[in-house]
Length: 424
Image 1 (tube, one colour):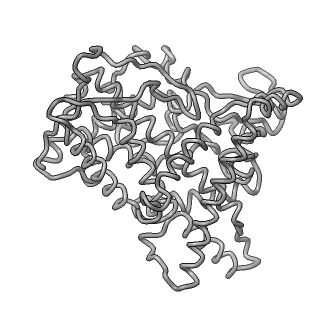
Image 2 (cartoon, rainbow, N blue to C red):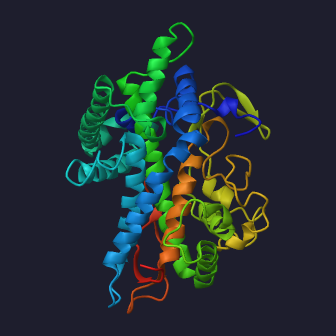
Image 3 (cartoon, helix red, strand yellow):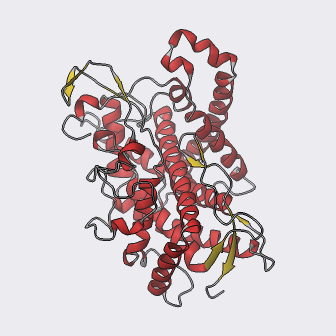
């Protein structure tokens, strides 16, 4: 991922990804010109610091809505709140507003429930390992098991939804209803890139047709929603099982916010221990234990081994993050291990190879700058406004069994009792 990154920078063919993201996305396509142009657009336009900051209002609104939902559902009798569902709703809200437009685009009466259901199916299928990927002549087994039919249905529904979104954006442009630069979503930005390329024909600009736009938007949505919500759920689960750390991070948040009505992104730089909690969650509960497979583009040497071209390579991020040679008490949740780290306030992609939750090198996830503010704001808001505990009459500690999928998530639904503490 560093010295020999280029030799390992391609991807093998993944049948399910080709069905769901058209073979024209950024995450799954082989190394080549399309990948370079797609990544360039993502880094410079979709996920730049300026663009991420433009979504600050959306993040703060969605965090406030999540807190309000918890407050309405919190019961004096100690009834549990479904924290998993609340976090999924928060994450979907942020990503859909960033990708498709403001909160009216997919409200409860115009596709909001459809969107949630669709992406649950989409992410479940995308994380499915198919027999045909490893034994091509047995691909018929995937058909027999119904995977191909499920993928076809989900892909068709998703395609219709995205076509509608793109058509609406194109119509707004024809009608002269332009969003100012501070409110442009991912579809707007992709259409801007196309228009700029048309104006500078012959200047090396790249054009993205509807298929490529849909594929890249799906990448953004899948990568951001799944890893963001699973990490937040794991963080809350770990803190429930570690009440001393829970109290420590709550004291930090409440001290920084004071008597304010809510946490804002202005408070986040002061929350150093909160960042330690999130980094430790990344380490102990790596969202993608096995990173997306890579494929060598040429014969190469690695640690004295000859690796032929077109070899499939899988990086075990879970094992790296729990290596006892790099970590003291690697199986324990210890946020303090990052307290003396110069990188405590940053999540630098691929510069700390003791753990690589976002990958590294050319194939590292460019969305870390988008995901982290959403995680920090959500966790800080939940911990500022409420004290949390397990439901009465149940076990004294939360079971931490895992469920595999596109990412590894908490197997059980996280149901917790919320006790409001902040001004109402």
